[in-house]
Image (cartoon, rainbow, N blue to C red; front, side, top):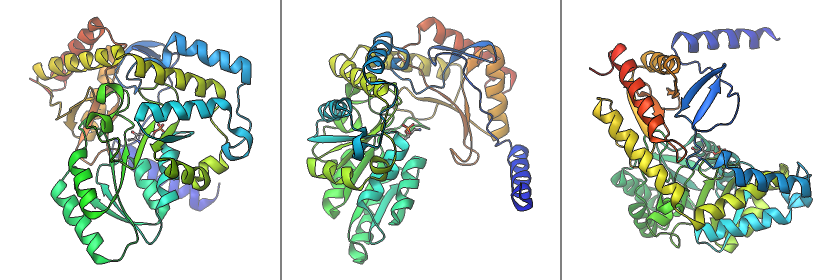
Length: 396
Ligand code: PMP
């Protein structure tokens, strides 16, 4: 290894470890469902984004296997050459139906979808108004576009309005976009989309909503834009297929002309191999399940409310979540990690989230109940939280 790289890595890794900020990755030895196994230990799983339990659904496994038998394990090429299988077209039609738009385009992941879609439309002569707490993939997509990034205070509509006015009145930009998460995954709060759309209309902003954590969860499963009835008002309805939908991939749903443009200007569509057939077929079937029934959605919310009430009752600060995402805010990074490790020892997997994922001093253990959890499992988790919380002096 070069000396300069060696010094860089040694110094920086040590600094992260000293600050309690080095994230150890724990491989899961089996399915990522209600319970998981890590290092041979069975744990109650409160850390997955498998909100509806679909990642391990038997019918979806069957559909994926059937597609693999028919098409093979790989798509064989990028979408724009001959990696577009009829399965991708069917998925995109289903996505447009799901989101109430004219058309949709799918990508290999939510992350590369944001990188692709933002930079396909915005450039150095443009500006992007971006919520301060937007996801890393939005931030990277904005950076890649080379547009001027103007962060507004989290869900602060006065700040957004003032910055939108300033940007438009400056005359410096050809286009101005406002971009926000639909559901903010660290606190579980919902973006104020009706106000955002109103401001967007007033100042002629392009609107982009990343509903990675809303689809399957809010709007009776159809997402946050649907929750507010704004399908015709939001230009980019972006989402991921890896969380509630249970598989993998990202998408943008919008007008036919927007999707036509993304198909010729999104670099991962042009230069990265398409999602494999088994995943595509399973995704379409998962979307159909979410469209056909709210049973899993209803169970998810019931479990979320139950866990929240239980943790609040024993004295945890669960923040101001409006969705099943339930943070336990601890603050100090080292205590947060110690708490998460102690939960592990007692049989709960709830990952600590610290800087840089959240701001410094806002360390938390984040709980993601799913439709797959039973009440009995949630009761066990709450009892473990109480024991460990008292032992570490986090609750009285
Ligand atoms: N956007 C948001 C808001 C997310 O939380 C995530 C996933 N962490 C992504 C995009 C990326 O999605 P994916 O995991 O499908 O790449």
